Image (cartoon, each protein chain N blue to C red):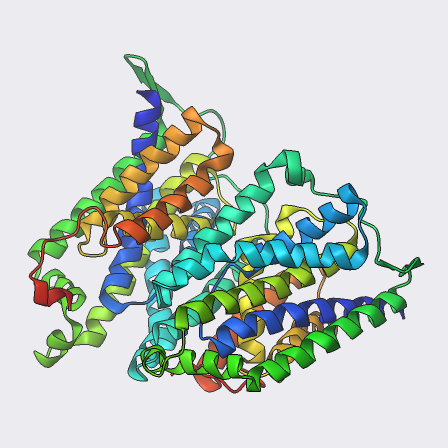
Length: 289
Length: 289
């Protein structure tokens, strides 16, 4: 049963990651490859708040979200000027830069050795020790964030984002403040993935920079593209595929050593097949025109 | 001086990759991430050929043929169908990302994730004045330089080369003039793969290789292209040399740990302040519109 809970917890964390990336790609049409960096910033900031300052669970999560949200300026300001491939290049640069800082700023991040001894969530003196209780807590958080994302789509902010995605020039012409909108979208998405990073740190109790590399960003992007963008269903499907694919591969009796490779190989295949046959992903609504 | 020469020799390899990346990007607007997969594959195929006892010259030929055939299959199955549908650049990028994942994970499944070497023992070194250079370093740079010179001459003198340059400058006009754009695209993908494979073999002969070396290499090629400029084919090669020298100086004056950060800060600076690169051609005002 613990294993099932473990899978559900990972699904909950990745579902938040996928929903936050969907805000950028699906609602805003902003393809970026630096999401793992902000996931890492959230994880590190929350871990430092918990281990160095001794603050509680929610202040740590909010601290991670705040730092990730502020540092989103590194990608949102260039987004004023760059689109398409050039924006992807900028986001790769930001991803590499943040990863290098996490890896080399040993005084704060402990470099390649990472931060260990992160405690499980504690709320009002109740320690979420068992995986079942963590599943419940993260499930409630996922539900809350999912409802916010669903409401966001139909809010004036969400509609303005979608208008910007479909035709930026037309959006500007009817008075939508596109630049300000991009700042908000990146801050919101980065804060949200920062929360997911904090949840990850609290669950695994140990973080190091390798969990937040460019490869992880590529995996997150693949997850969202495969699941689909433009609604809440798509990212949730992407996260489910990410978690369930290795389980499905177990039926093939593959050795554990190659399971990760086979999973990524399947992801690569799915990306190409999706782009050919179903560009909106398995359950998404937005497709690149 | 030693650092400068080392940087120059490394820069020649980066420049070769810059040219390989720019060949595809300038002519087709495809962000060719899969080139990283082809780069990673080349030394593994070479090692497999050498292990079976094939002579080195024949083995290199096999590597080039395999790389070209794979690149052509990527064009035929992914990029040409997308181009016919007039898909945006993001779709090409996602398709290329899928191909990269398939290539790298296939390599890992066949040959494993471990580091490999193409030669054993201590390399021969040559010293003159106060400079010491390894044989593998010199051979790799010389091989790449020869390939770049041959390709540049072909692009400047051969009819097909001139057509490729025309395709980069104005693809619509090339099509209207009745040139076979599909055949030209095949040439571009094939040549780019052959050049990347040459650089990969040179680099692997010097420092070894593993299945995951491709992404970093192709990103360095991308930075070289931005530094040198997308307006010419030789610009990315010169940009690569400058980048190689700068990276060597970073190691000398700072630390190897910050090499990647400096590289990608440079990318950001160029994209912001000189997106046309160092070697931008002076063009008439209406050509910029």
